[in-house]
Length: 222
Image 1 (spheres, one colour):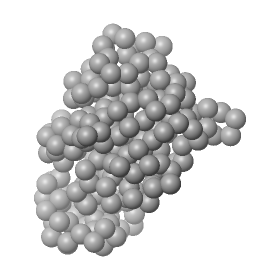
Image 2 (cartoon, one colour; image 1 turned 180 degrees about the vertical axis):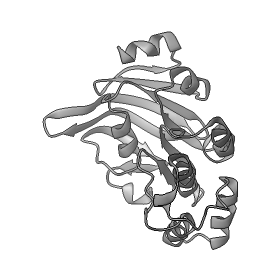
Image 3 (cartoon, helix red, strand yellow; image 1 turned 180 degrees about the horizontal axis):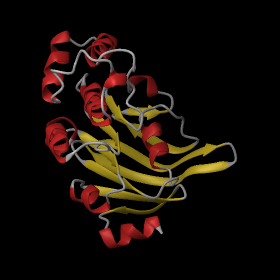
Image 4 (cartoon, one colour; image 1 turned 135 degrees about the vertical axis):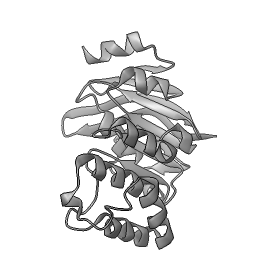
């Protein structure tokens, strides 16, 4: 059963077209890589899928919710890990995760479990403002999966992480998680290697989809 179904999806910012003609179907448990240069529309696509932006045309269904009219169904089902960590800098890591746990009706036990999973137990009671970029990214990943969502929307999820930290997060946000994932990345080879299919965007338009060769994907960035 498809977790995501898009047909001729469109999104505009005023007179500027940010997305046009995006069509793709992603089955449950599969990973879609979204490739393209800066400004191609990758982050806009993620924000539409998360229900944060309204599509202006086409057809979009995410986890059975038709967008935009049923986007209220998505917050409990989607984990979003973007460029901004969505953490309060003046709160500690533990306080941040505790706050999000209460929002989602999740047990405090889950907070401790995830702090251990991302290797942040010892630094959990320090303010986010005092932590390194990599530590903040680990906490942001924990926040994204706190409510055990079936769908992850990941925008350069390994930014700021060293190889050891990336490996630590694999069970949570990698293919090993078993979740449906949409992965935005500039790492063409790495992104294709951990994905089942890909969409290539250029100036907001879909120029390739399905099984994409790395050599063809490089043309998106020229």
